[in-house]
Image 1 (tube, helix red, strand yellow):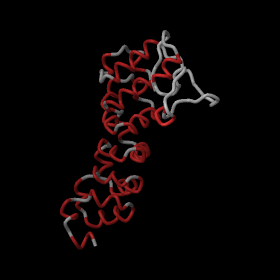
Image 2 (image 1 turned 90 degrees about the horizontal axis):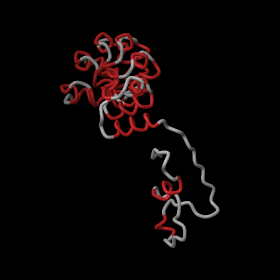
Image 3 (image 1 turned 30 degrees about the vertical axis):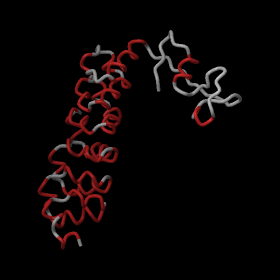
Image 4 (image 1 turned 45 degrees about the vertical axis):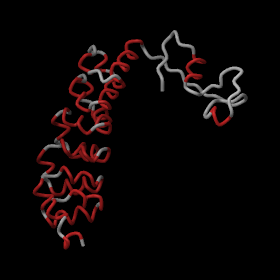
Length: 206
């Protein structure tokens, strides 16, 4: 959606977006596409955005760095998530409060697995946290603590949640024939991520 400034006119914005037929317009119905016709109900939700936040979101949309924003904006969940969607490593510049917020970091990881790299160590070592992160984004296992990526039982649970996770398990597990079979039995997608020698092993694939 488009952020409106105070001086913008709602009708102009709707017309520009194709949501309102210009007055006196004679375009065919096919040309009008999604334009609202006379008699149709139109629901508009107006949300006032502070000028500072609006400018920050425009800055982020133009690939600007979160680091360049003032501290209050780096503590704004909407602004920080917008930055993370552009660049997952932006979490490193978020406020300490946001980086310590379990639910916020999970939302960040869902947008970009790179965010987990800049999460507190306590999260990256937390089995339940990492499992939930993997459920939302299979590549998140990449930044989990090494002990977790080497843990057979944990990795199998992660693979059960998201087959992509096997790609980021410790190499010794991905090379282990019995372990790889167990992973593939739990989630067929995992077969793409077993070690190369197993992917070329006809007996394994059969």
